[in-house]
Image (cartoon, rainbow, N blue to C red; front, side, top):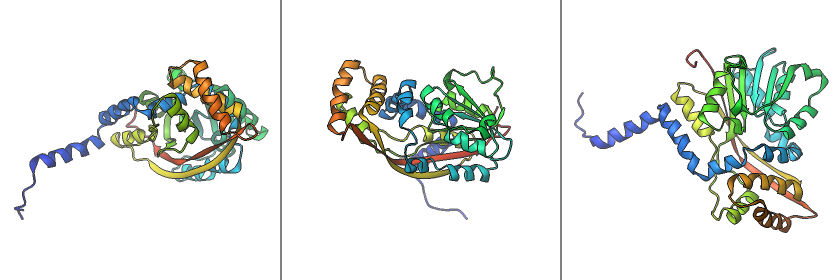
Amino acid sequence: MKSNHQYPRGKIEIKISKMDNIFNKNFWLNEWEKDKKSDTYSVHKGFSTREYWDSAAATYNQNKKEIKGRRLKKTMSFFKKSGLLFDGMTVLEIGCGTGMVAIELAKHGAQVTALDFSKGMLEQFKQGITPDIKKNITVLHEDWYKIDSEKKGWKKKFDLVIAFMSPGVASPESFFKMMSCSKKGCAIRGWAAKRNHPILSDLWEKIVGTVLEDKPQSILYKINLLFSLGFFPEITFDAIEWDQTVSIKEEFDSQMAFFKKVSKQTDTELEKIIRPYLESMSKDNYIVRKHKGLTATAVWEMDSRYP
């Protein structure tokens, strides 16, 4: 039956074009590249240094709410449901931090290679490795961006490759390198909505001179890029919230490491802004740092389509 309804030709073409973009790899690569002009990219740069994570290491995993926020039990169930949790499996974790996920995987019988560029984080990690799983974990002090995965013989070597809240996969090149090391599946986790970080926001206004517009990190580009490549990950979201009590010195060291990366001001100029601000909001030389946000975890199977 022929319809007599007339559609505006131009509007249909525009809608089809936009739909085509969703499944166009280059479209998402270009969108990811454009993000380098945003506050989000600058914030990511601030969180991407060894100095920042070395200074932050001592304040990690300090209370039950924070540990609960890592969603370890749910994560393991997610892996098992996807067929990516079994005895003897091989795992590569990029940006392992203090090792909570790696240790949990090792307890499930996985052989885990875990790497991070922060010595401070790795020191915390090593302290948590118990004798019964020591043989299951290899800890490497490495920068994922600098690793030649082919020379290491890592191409399609691991059953599962993961990068949770990791600056190590913040570029398309590093993300594709991650995928090339997997023979069965991959998993990523990152912020999926604007985070609440009042201390950083206040200091951003004082130092950068603008209101901070920190959108979700690159996980949304990664997920859409996967769709364009023909992969359809299982995605789960988690709201997280906890308070973290840290000393003025610990917070000062972290904020200095962050703003030295994103600001053109000298160390002396930064100190004159950061230290008085932190002292004004401290109590008995301690500060309560509030963490609140939404994370997304995506798990997908690899196959022969990906080289």
